[in-house]
Length: 91
Image (cartoon, rainbow, N blue to C red; front, side, top):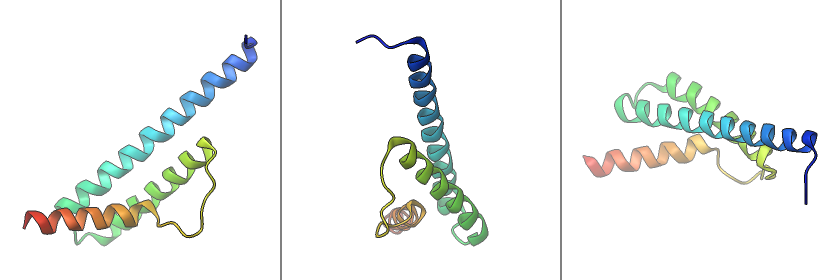
């Protein structure tokens, strides 16, 4: 099946948008983990980056066509638990 040029352009643009959203989410996740590891008491930074990470994750889910489920935890909450577990294991 051949795609027209406009369909192909839309597909490439969508792939680029998903890749950009994934990169944004990974960048916020890495920043969140770094602050949680190095400055666990810096609640303001964790809250701000956590909110950005949650928005990036929601955007990525939307682009991929996944529904937002009301009973799932925010990604920042899950990452915070993982960081706390890792710091407790290293202590």
